[in-house]
Image (cartoon, rainbow, N blue to C red; front, side):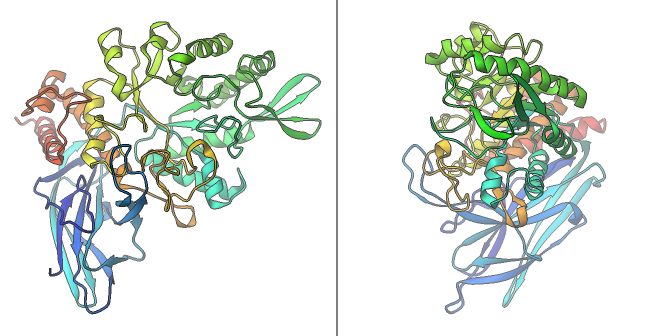
Length: 546
């Protein structure tokens, strides 16, 4: 095969051993919007040379809004809980080095092209040409990108991807809360916000998440605690810096670390307390969740934390957690834990990822975060006023998810589903979890993408820790954000028309009703739907008929 380069959609995964499908759908976006597509490249080998270095240039009136990255393969030992062979999968988006990148010969490579507009971007139909030059190679492909004269509104969905600052300290070998650690965290928070995260897990003490019973994660505790003569005192200097850093990046909401251990609320989180000048662990796996000692601590800590949030002006935008993913067997433990703090948190939202309807039915959680495959009873019986959804490795079949081995359309479809079910918030546990399952050891996410075969690859993190502390994005993060932009576009079209009309547009041409279990698996549906939505918005905005 001769050298070749052509465009493919962002929902196509380019594998080295199979020709991808060429892009056929028109490319369009609004202002304040994002559009991604790819350039698939095949290079013929010359002699024994198995790689070539190419320069990459963008020629377009939109060039200031265009970014090009190289799609890299990553390994997966556990692509799925179903049958799936270990292998290499396209996922990592690596920045070009001085406009250049390496490509393998005799296989397919891909560049990821992103057009990210702002309100100053000119409307119109614009060519975007991508040119590759190297020794004996000159390839190019051109896309026609239509920027509609309408502005995508801000995101209303509350969206959290749990942020694990301890994992960043471990990966980069940095002391927790050193200046270098703060810089690395800030860069990842900035990328999270850029890709639709507006709520952040805040480690007032080390979050008791995905930790083996009796085990510990690297301590990351924002609030200093001291105990003198039986009285607790708190230092909020690091907490204030955290809030300032997050707000500067664009974070709007803060969720406090869980007050009890995961999967049942049976024990206390790890909390270090300074006594007589010595810092030591006072609470942890050894402490019963409902012990008088912990209640005494909470009676001092929670009012002090809330008062600090009031001083910082964020008290109307904070939420609390009891325990993550309690099951039916944990109902009594969860009830006791909640009752222990109910009077201290009166008036503040308590949200938890749980899927058993009885927790909500019994009044134990008024704002549940429901597994995507368990939403039916919450919709059919008494729908919560503020309805959240989440998915993780447990939602591995049928429903939307973003494992590395899944088709990208199964990732992006969530935006349409969030709109249809009028979801208030979305939660996922792994923005940057670089540990093995149960945090038994730190891992290198470039080499281990499945938490030591604990979860299907891609469940534990969305972003890679790049060189010099700079985060590198993934196909999954970019495609997920495209889904969030779909949600915003649907909401805008509803403002211009009606909810009924938008639902009809979503359903148009489908033989069966779109649900969380039943939806088009091909990329064409989403690409054509977004194109129709953009056209309709442009027509309505400019006073024309669609």
